[in-house]
Amino acid sequence: NSRYLNDFEELQSLGHGGFGYVVLCKNKLDGRQYALKMIRLKDKSPPVNDRILREVATLARLQHQHVVRYYQAWIESRVAGNLEDSMWGSKTGRSSSFSCMGGSLSDTIGQEDMIESPYLYIQMEYCPRTLRQLFDSYRHFDKELAWHLFRQIVEGLGHIHAQGIIHRDLTPNNIFFDARNDIKIGDFGLAKFLKLEQLDQETTFPSDARHAPGVSIDGTGQIGTYFYTAPEIEQGWPKIDEKADMYSLGVVFFELWHPFGTAMERHIVLSDLKQKGELPAAWVAVFPEQASLLRLLMSPIPADRPSAVELLQDAFPPRMEYELLDNFLRTM
Ligand code: ATP
Ligand code: MG
Ligand code: MG
Image 1: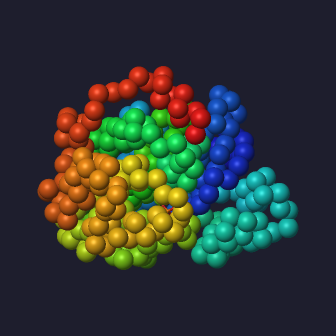
Image 2: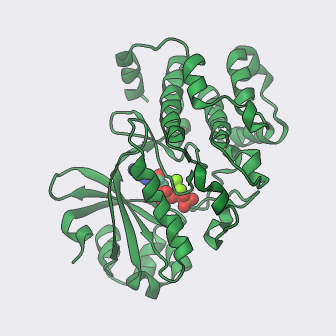
């Protein structure tokens, strides 16, 4: 008997990553929408399962207005045919229907496995947009908005770090907006508990290859993480701490303050920043204070980067009226 099929109605695919996929669902009892992440468990390799289960353990431990809200998780075997038929309207076999999502799921897993495997289901808050999507349509740049969003991200990150967790994959793709346009940090698929760090460092799994040093392809085949990854992670330092997230935060901060006209411009400017530490001179002239904060956040020495708590203490100008900003966000 499937809890998933009993309790939820599938509405729409939200995408897929390296381990599984995410579906927008309506809970039949409470009538509300949720994002359900389904991750295939590999019964023959417990270390991989441990790693997958860590995502739930991490999410369950976090409760903050700027972290994606977690509701529950369970394991059940996925019922064959269900997803394919209801979401992609295909009754003609699952390989063709899954290819609608980009083709990688059936390629990597194989059809037989998909029918039999146990899946981990994670029910979480549905977040309709990502910061990446905002950046892609960033037309009316506004200083107050940039500070407002940055503050919410730093508050969420401060909570994550206070729980002893490093996110390790902080990018505009993993920073969401909820239905009220508040920031929610999500996707803890790569997160680590600080105290476990040393135990874990020896263990690497094949599914981690795309996060190996220098590799920049994420689960959906996009070049997603390269610009945001701290140098100590790329270089494989034995001990990584929460300052790795502060580096990623720096790049996000820069994008908040520097809208790009085209994907090409973004690529060139972020490459110069990453590889040479160079900032556009015209931008530095207009935003000298932001530039010095950015240089601190992106310092090659992790200890030189400010912490989230330090940022909250002295990096922000006085708050703006919330209503004004809310109106502003609505027009974007
Ligand atoms: P990777 O395997 O590299 O982590 P990913 O981050 O894209 O890839 P997932 O975290 O599984 O993989 O997310 C898959 C898709 O689902 C993404 O497009 C993401 O934006 C979307 N998504 C994830 N969580 C939510 C959520 N709570 N609300 C709305 N969409 C979500
Ligand atoms: Mg993601
Ligand atoms: Mg992910």
